[in-house]
Image (cartoon, rainbow, N blue to C red; front, side, top):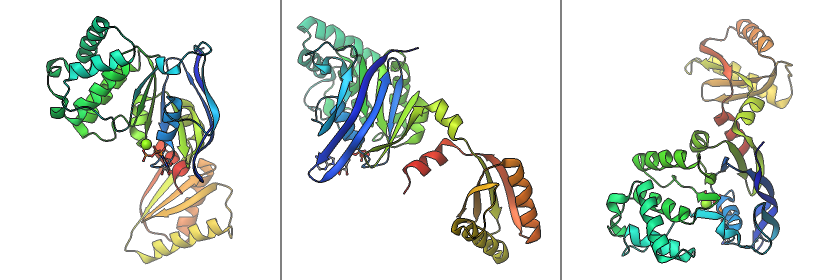
Length: 315
Ligand SMILES: Nc1ncnc2c1ncn2[C@@H]1O[C@H](COP(=O)(O)OP(=O)(O)OP(=O)(O)O)[C@@H](O)[C@H]1O
Ligand SMILES: [Mg+2]
């Protein structure tokens, strides 16, 4: 059983009449890696800025278990913003020392820590080079070194890999995989794949509200549904007409099949979410035979996390 590190309760933010974050609740357990997942404009940055104390919430609160009353939560948090601004005239070393000094480290402590961290993020050789000449991936790794300078309990990153090219992404993802075994991590992303690759828990937000949350493993097993995909011959009007009519009949409620929970036509693929797989398979084959529907492939499987994500965040 892990201990709770942070709890968010009823957190809300309005910008004028625009409600960017609408009373969200979630908690972070110590040692976990949590992805705040959601499409553009969902409210990820706003939420993160409230967590880190950079933005005052309209309502709600963020509490840390290990924080003494009156203690500043920023001492516990290392933060990498979505678009960090660096002083191009500084060297990597100078920048991390500067960050350490801002966090209250002494001169020699800040220097030692900077050296150790630059090595850690693979920038030891570039430590004396000016930041203006750093690549996107290098800047993001430097941002990580900066965020870790005061040995925070929680590392918070806003879209740490979204702006990087494939090579930069790989470098940063590799580093994050290492870091997450050492500290609790919260990062935001709109890319499901990045969340799947790194995190233990997900909080999916949509239009400022929590749409779904839990451990990746439990979400996977709870929301896994049997699906059947039937590939029709696009040039064959009989097959396509049947599929269109079938979807229309099902979705309008004109026909109801106990074995089927959802039908959707995606191009020339009929995508069926089944209520009972065995019955569905049998009934569908009978239906296909009855209408002599020509098809090129019939595939039986389970819905993926991608299907679920699209359903949760899709309009
Ligand atoms: N300072 C602000 N003033 C007015 N509206 C804002 C402000 N900051 C954010 N918003 C609005 O709040 C909503 C949530 O924005 P936010 O930046 O938190 O989303 P996000 O999930 O981080 O999106 P992205 O994936 O594009 O980074 C958006 O509709 C945005 O336009
Ligand atoms: Mg954002």
